[in-house]
Image (cartoon, rainbow, N blue to C red; front, side):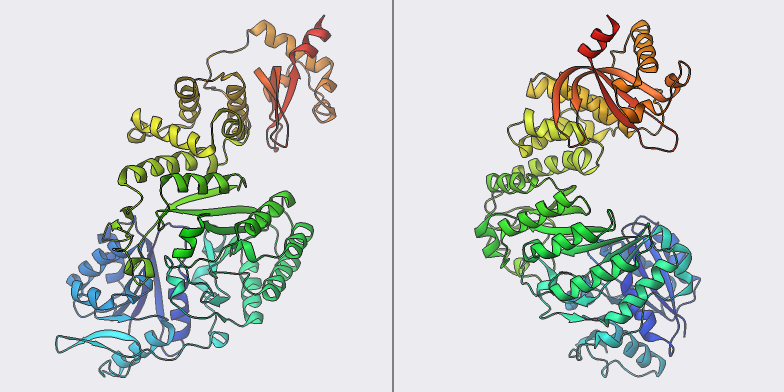
Length: 584
C-alpha cells in the first residue's frame, strides 16, 4: 500500500512535526512517504508530485494557514486519482468536522484530535478492506451517510517513537526550523486559543527528548523551536531542560520557547542571565492585552507587573531575545484601550513586538460567543475579525496601519538608533508615532508600489518633516547611522543629499591618520594611512553623539563609520569643537 503524508507549510523553511509523528507511529507495519510543499506552490505542481507516488492513501495535515490551498489540492487530486483515499487531520478539521465532510465530499475520512493511533487504525482498516466503524475518533461516510466514532483514550506520550530519525530529513536540518514538543496541552483556558480545549498537560519522555536534541544538533540543526504551549509551567522541568541545553548545546544552535512571563521566577531568570550563552535562547511571550476586564472575559489569568519584571530582567541580562505578542480585537478592548495596551507593552522595549488580530478559530469559546460581542469576521480561514461592538472597521484599519509600520521600522531591527529616539522624544506615544506614520504611508499610496531599502529612510524623514513638524537634525543623523551600520562594506550610494565637500573630507581623513586616538584606541589600532582610510572609513555630518546603550547627546560633529574586513561596521563620533580645536 502506497501511503503519502503531506502538508502545505507557510514557508519553505518550516517543517511539519505532525506528519513525522504519524510516519514514525505507523512504522514498521506501514511505510509512509513524506511530501511537504508550501502554500505558495502551484496546485497543479503539488498534485502532479503526489500523483507520481501512485498513492493508495494520502493524509493531509491541515491548519488555518493552509486549509484553503489544501482543499484545492484535495479536489484536484481526487479528480485525477479517484481511488486514492484522502484522510485529513489537524486542528482546522478536528472541529466542525461534520461541516467539512458535507462541504468537501472529496475528503474520505477526518481524524478527530490526536492522530497517531487513529491514522494507523485507518490504515489497518483500509489494508484489511474493513469498514471504519472500529476506528476510534473519526468522521467518515457509509452508504452516503455521515458517521462519527467515539474518541479513543489519550496516548501515553512517553512511549511515542521519535519523529526525528528519518534519513531524508538530515540534508535539510541546517536550513529549516525544526519543531519539537516536550508536552501537549495547556493549563490555561484562554477563550481565543485552541489549546484551552484540551484539559491538562501530558509530558513526553525527558531522556528521549534529550537524545533527540543531541541527534538533531549532531546532524546540523540550527534553529529548534519548542511548540509546548507553556514551556515553563513546571519550573523544575524547565530548569532541567535549560541546564541540559546550556551544558550540551552545539555552538550556532538557537532554541526558541513559548514562555508564560508572569509565572517565571526571578531566580530562574537570574540563572539564565548568568549561565546561558548569549543568543542560545529566544523567548516568545504572549501578553495579548493589559486590559483587566478583557483578560477576565477571555478567562486569561495574567499579572502584568510580574510579566513586566520578567521581560525587564531578561532584557537587562542581555542574553535572550524576546518576542512579545499582542492581539487586537479582544472583547471590550476598544481603540483607546488597545492604544494603552500597546504603549504599556512597548515600554518594555522587546526586540520584537508582534501585533496580531483576533481570529475566531473553530472550536474556541470566543467563536461560540461571537454574537454576544458583536463580532463580524471573515468566514474562511484564518477567520480574522473585521469589527466588534467596541471596535469599528475604521479602528481596525488604523491598527493595521500601525502594525505595518511596526514591522518595517521596529521588528526589522534596522533602525536601532533612530527608532528609540523618535518614539521617545518626537512623538506623544509610541503607538501614536506608528499609527500616524502608517496613515501617512497609506495616504501616499506607498503600500501599493513597494519600496527599496533606501526608501524606508527617505519616507520616514519626509513624515517627520511634514507631519510631526519637528527639528529633524538629530533624527536624520540617527537615520544616517542606522543606514551606514546596516552596510557590510563602504557604501557606494547614500540616500541623503548633503555630502561633505572634498576639501573638508580630506582634512578629516588626514587628521584621523595623524591622531586616530581622537576616536579611541580600537580605531587607532588599525594604523590607517592616507590611502587605506578612504577604503574603509565613511564620514558624514552628524548633529548627535550616539552611545552603545542607545542614549543620544546633541553634539554637532561628524559620524565616522569604520568597515574593517570580516567585522561589523563600527561607529565613532568626532565632535565639531574637537575637530576645530585640533585643526587650529
